[in-house]
Every structure is written in C-alpha cells, then in structure tokens.
Length: 458
Length: 106
Ligand SMILES: Cc1cc2nc3c(=O)[nH]c(=O)nc-3n(C[C@H](O)[C@H](O)[C@H](O)COP(=O)(O)OP(=O)(O)OC[C@H]3O[C@@H](n4cnc5c(N)ncnc54)[C@H](O)[C@@H]3O)c2cc1C
Ligand code: FES
Image (tube, rainbow over all chains, first blue to last red; front, side, top):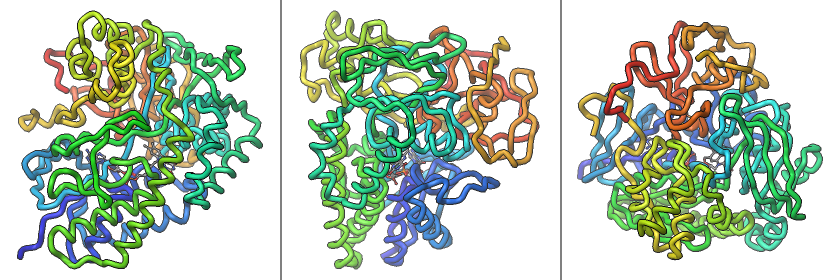
C-alpha cells in the first residue's frame, strides 16, 4: 500500500504532537499552518531578533514551551511543513490553501484539524471603540511584540485567561487599572472538586490569584458590565460596571482587554461536514467527537482547543490521540500502551475542562439584557435592537435567518465575535431555547482571501 | 484626515532592535525590525483606520488574524492584514482603501 496522505491543519501543541506520533509510526504527514512560525497560541514564538527568555515569555509553562519547540525542530525534516498557508476550504477529500496569494490543494486520506481557539466574546455597550481588544489580542501584543495595548488597562470578562493576562501585564510593567470578572468567587470554590483533577494546575491557579492580590490592582468579582465609555476619535476613556454590592463604579482607562474564555475555531470541521452537537453547559454547538477525536465523518479527526477548550496540555494529548486513531483506522500498528495512557490522561483533561467552564461560566443573561442601542456586530455596526426586531417582528427565530435579515455574522469576522451573543439575543427575544435557534453555518473561505488570490477566489 | 493622536500602544521592552522607516498616509513613522504593521502604526498613532460603518476610529481587535479589523493597503492597492504582516523598510501604506470599487473583494 502506498503511504497514506495525512494532512494536519495547525502547528500548535495539538498539531505538533499529532505530527510527532505519525512520524514515530514511520509516516510523513503534511502540516499546514497560517502563521509565520510554529507554536500555536500559548507557545507562540516571538519574531527573530527578540531577546526575552522563555521564562519571561511563558512563565510557569516555559519548560513545556521549550520542549514543544525543540521537538518541532527535530520533527521538521521528517514532515512536509508549510507555514503561511491558510486553509480556506475543505471539500471532497481536498484541503484548499492560499499562501502569499498562491492557491494550493492537498488531497488527503486522513485529515486532522487542530485549528485552535479564538476568544469567546460578549458585547458590552461601547465595545466598538478603538482601544478595546480581545483578551487574546492583549496577550499577543505583549508576548509577540513586547507591547501593552494602552497606558491604563482594564481587563473585563471572565475565564482563566482574564487573570493570567492581567498578571502578565502587571509583571511586564504595564499599567493595569482593574481586573473585573463577571464570575462570582463562589463559582470557583464550587468547581474545586473538578479542578482538583489536575492538582498541579490548581496550585498554579492559586499562585496566580495570590500574585494578583499582591499586585495592588483593583480586583472585583461578580461584576455586571454596564458600558465601555469612549469617543469616536480618541477611543476608550473608561469602563463602568455594577459591582457585586449593586453600586455602579467607573474606572478611567485608555484600553480594555475583553473576553469570556475561548471558543473552538470549528469552521473547517463544519466545511468537512462533521456533525455538531449542542453543549448545554457552555451553551454552544461544537463538533461531535469520540474519545480519540474521530468526527462523524470517516477520515476527519479533530484535536486540541479547536474542538474542546482543554488548554495546552489537553491539546498535546488529544493531538497524539487523534494520530493513534488515524493509525488504527488505516490498519497500521498503534502503540497500544501509550494509547491507553493517553486516553486515561484525556479523561482528566476533560474533567478539568468542565471545572473551568463551571468556575467561569458564560454569562448568557448579559447578552439577553444588552440595551437595544448596544452594537452587537463590531464589523458593520449592527445593533442589538436590529437583531431583536428581526427576531420578534420578522419571525427570525433561527440564527441564519437573523443573519440574512440583519447581516449579523456576515461581516469581516464572519460571526466569530458576535455569533454566540447573537444566538442568545435571538433566543431570548423570540422565546425559543438556545439550542433551537441553531448556529451560524461555516462558510468558505473561512477567512477573507487576499485580493491577489485572483481567479481562485470563490 | 491625519488625526493620528497620541500613540496607543506602549513598548515595554525589546527596544534594541534596528530602526526602520515606513510611510503611513504620507507621514513617515519610525518602526522597529520585527514589528507587525499594527504595532508599527499604533506605537506612533492612536488609530489604525476609520470604520466604514460608524464614526469611530479603529485599532484592530484580536491581533490573531481572526477579526479582520486591521486591514490597511499598500499604495498600489494590495490589502494587508496589519496584525500578522511584519513591517518592511520603505513600505508605504494607506489606511483607507485606495480606489474603492464595487463589489469590494473580500
Ligand atoms: C489568544 C489565546 C491565548 C491563549 N493563551 C493561553 C495561555 O496563556 N495559557 C494557556 O494555558 N492557554 C492559553 N490559550 C489556550 C491555548 O490556545 C491552548 O491551550 C493551546 O494553544 C491549544 O493548542 P492547539 O494546538 O489546540 O491550538 P493553537 O495553539 O491555537 O494552534 C492552532 C494553530 O492552527 C492554525 N490555524 C488555525 N486555523 C487555520 C487555518 N484555517 N489554516 C491554517 N492554519 C490554521 C493557527 O495558526 C495556529 O497555529 C490561549 C488561547 C488563545 C486563543
Ligand atoms: S486585529 Fe484581528 S485580524 Fe488583525
């Protein structure tokens, strides 16, 4: 039998570990990544010429980051690695790419999608102002470019990244005004039994909280965001929230890092026609997978934060497991002892993921309670009221209909940042359960293509 | 236009890199080798561009190539995503789409 053609999308922890496991089995996978360099999100590499140490860049995760980068360097000659390749479509067993304006195609027998996550966002009135960044964006400014997003930064939202980025900013010498978390502290306490599935991570989390307390920044938990203040030209000038005590408080600032944990980048899985299922706990649709990452479509495997937000260690495990599944399904020898160990560790990762989701819940009611004049779609300035009106006045009680009527989800970000909140608004306005309003369908190209893509443009 | 205002981003380190000059809307700004276009512009100005759908200035959002809020153009009309395009010496950028034509290619 000729060697099977195995394509991996994403050179983050999940994709790199998948590639490593396939190379160990004597195969030569194709690894495609949109980025300039390998490493993915958490272990993102700084550009050539930057001098910060791994400890400065990756903190407690420095050793893991270095280990992953080193194993990638060893792997590189044994795989077909194509950086700067955006995968914009998957159809009929072929992955379509674009690289510096040049289209390409990779046919596959097996496809592992490890496309990672993006910030999960919930609008707040005024979030369209210049100086509001996603939390991930705030972290990338620091990690990849040694910059702070402003002189006086407020971090608003919830999730593990909120606290981590606030502390990273503080340690790097940036001005942090406040950390405003929508999750009440008791939710974190209640989640302790599940978080204890990974005692080491739990200790790191507690140290993080300790570091924040010692930092002197204002910290408020259980807040309700009211408004991001700003001016058309100058951008952000402040943030108002209702504190847990009920009092409204304004924090003056010139930048905001905003985010509510992460959401999987599942568009490619959607284009590959993988079945999705509704997760009532996190209130989102995500692709169905089995314990080793098999999707509902034979030959398509899903790994890492692009399918479940388990974090970096979980991504490494699920990438290696997906590779085991590929080997098994292709009738190749599988390292069975390792496979069993990976499956056991994957269960721990999944329990911890559930704990994090419970500790930092998606505050669905905040979307339903947004004022009509708040902007829902930052790309095209579409308001919450317009979407409500479509849902109640025009019977758009399904998100793709609401999209057709209002264009919400059709702008530059293709619904990445407004989709989840938009679904909550449609559900609340039309009195239909969130599950029934559905999800925005993925569309090719998954990102707008450069103009020079020429005739290959769909 | 102009309206550049105060720089938005603050450099916290890594400032020993080579200095290079780029032009933004006809104005020369100094960047450091290894900067993204977004960082080069926002360490010199308060905004990246203006929204086509509202009055506000825009300055990018995700920095990870997902939101497309950060498009700028070369003088000859090539669209660049400022957050993941490294700066090059001598580059001349405009922050408004030159020769806006319909349909806008996306
Ligand atoms: C901004 C951000 C910051 C984070 N910071 C932390 C942190 O500090 N600590 C932590 O524990 N976790 C963090 N996380 C979670 C973290 O992403 C993961 O735990 C880990 O990086 C997941 O690994 P992964 O391999 O699944 O995905 P990623 O590491 O995200 O890698 C996915 C890769 O796929 C590529 N890709 C995606 N779509 C395409 C496409 N269509 N075509 C080609 N290539 C594509 C991307 O370029 C990327 O390199 C962060 C997540 C985000 C989004
Ligand atoms: S800032 Fe989001 S794509 Fe560049």
